[in-house]
Structures are given as structure tokens and as C-alpha cells.
Length: 168
Image 1: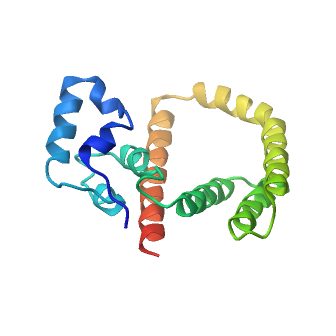
Image 2: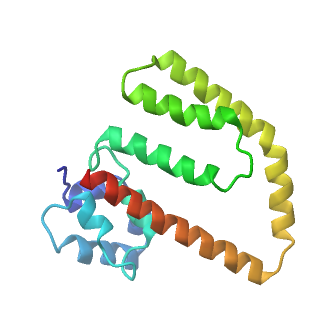
């Protein structure tokens, strides 16, 4: 399993180093071990490191194999598509194409074509998303709090996905 030192991690230029408090916290956590694996980082208590920061910290090829990061992206995309009533088939096909590409079943060019089609689907949906964002912005604080809670739950689920991929 891959691992990194605190000094190697600092080379990623985490935003925590921008404040004295953040730098102290990183030094304190980093001093606990000589080398850190992705599982070590993902296992840190939420009170010390948020799920979002854990994901940022470990989604690097220096810590997790590139193939697993591609699979992580596919799983996250699938989770998002589950929230869409009728996902565009081009988006679904792009995820399938990525997995075929990982297995060597399609070429880079075929993957690029699937990606371009998914981007076209996203562009077509952008207007609906802009309308939804404007609608959401008009909602009250309770709506914003519910949205923030959903985002936090999503990040925690993504941490679980990463743990599962690392164990496999």
C-alpha cells in the first residue's frame, strides 16, 4: 500500500498551511506517524479532519493507485446520476466507457468521444441547473441548511467508497 510523509504531503500545498492555526494542526496530526496511508488519513476522526478534506488529501496518485481513483470518479458520478429523474443516456454511457477504457476494451479516442458526448449532455442541462440554482437561492435558511447537510452526507459516503476501493 502506498504511503507518504508529512513533508511529501505538504508538497501538495494544502490550504491548511495558509493559516498559522491550520499549519499547527497539520503538524500535530502529521507528527503522529512517520508515513501515512490513505486508510490512515480516511480513518482520522471527523472532529479533526472533515470528510471533504480527507477526500482532497487522498485523491492523489501518490497515495492511491490511479485505477482506483478512476473507479472512485465513476462511483461518485453514478451516485449523482441516481439523484436525476431521467439521466441523459450519454452521461451513463460515459461512465460505462470509462470502465471499458480501464479494462483496455476501448481506445483513448473512444473514451474522449464518450466524454465529449457527456459534456454536451451537461451543457444541454446547464439551463435547467441555472434555473434550479436561482430557485434554490430564493429559499430560506432552512433550505440552505438541508442542502448543506445533504452535501456533508455525500462527502461521508464518498469517504466510505474510497475505503472500500482501497481494501479491494
